[in-house]
Image: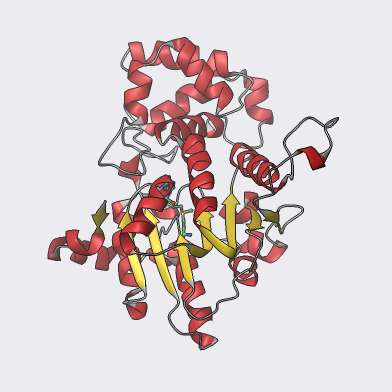
Length: 339
Ligand SMILES: C[S@@+](CC[C@H](N)C(=O)[O-])C[C@H]1O[C@@H](n2cnc3c(N)ncnc32)[C@H](O)[C@@H]1O
C-alpha cells in the first residue's frame, strides 16, 4: 500500500500543479444527486473509492463544512497515480481531513484498516475513466489517439491493450469483444484485428479504430449512431483493467465496511457495470436466497442492504446538455440498516 504523501516529490508536484489547471475539465456527474444522499454527522468517515480529480470529494467536504459538521474525513482511493497527484492539489484546503491512497478499490478493507478506521458511513464509486485519462493521447484510451492503445488506468502494472491485441488468439479477441463490448459483429472485428496486426498495421489507437470501422459492412457503418469502434474500445479497456471482476470484489468489500446506516453509492456508465451493481444490491437486499417454494421463515439469513433507489437515478436534461459524459450515468444507492 503506497501513500501518495510519502511518494510525492518536487518534480511530480510541479507537473501536477501545471496539470491541475486543466482539472476543471472533468465535471463530476450527478453531484447534486450524490449530495442528496450525504447527511454528514460528527465523526463521519467517507470513502471515495474512485477519487479521480477529486470533484465528488470536494463537493462532500464543502457540504460538511457548510453544515458546520466537525471531523468529517475522506479517504480517496485511485489506481491512477496521476489523478491522485492532481486531486491532492485540488483538495489541499481540506487537509488533513483527506487521505490519499494509490490502490485498487477492491483493496479498500485493508486501506481502511491501515488508517485505523473501523468502518465507513458513506462510500462512493464513480466508475469508468476520467476525462483526464480519456483526453491524454499517450494513454491510448481515445479512438483519435496517435499512440499505442495502452488503456491501463494504472500504468505501473499489468498488460496494455496493445499487449492483448498482439498476443491473443482471434477467438479470444472475439470473446472479449462479444462479452465485454456486446458487439454482434465481434467475429468480423476480431478477424480484421488479427489480420491487421499480423501485417503490423496497428501502431496506434487511431489505427485500431480504423480497422474496427473497416470490419463493419458499409450500410451498418453508415447507420451506426456511434463510432463503430466504441464497443471494441470499451471491451479492451474493461479487460485490461479487469473492471467487472474488480467491481464485484469492491461491492463485497465495501458492503463489509459499512457502519450501521452507512450508504453505498455507485455510478455506472454502461449496462454491464450497472447490471453487476443491480444484481449485487438485490442479492444483498433479499431476505432469503432459497428457491421461491421454500418459506422465508425457513431462512436464517437477514437482508444485508436496503435499496434506496428503486430505479437508477439518471441525470436531468440540463446536466446531460452540459456534460456529454453524464448521458449514460446511472446512480444506485443502498444502505446498511440499523442506524
Ligand atoms: C470517473 S473517474 C472519477 C471522477 C471523480 N469522481 C471526480 O469527481 O473527479 C473514475 C476514476 O476511478 C479510477 N478507478 C477506476 N477503477 C478503479 C479501481 N478498480 N480501483 C481504483 N480506482 C479506480 C480511475 O482511475 C478514475 O480516476
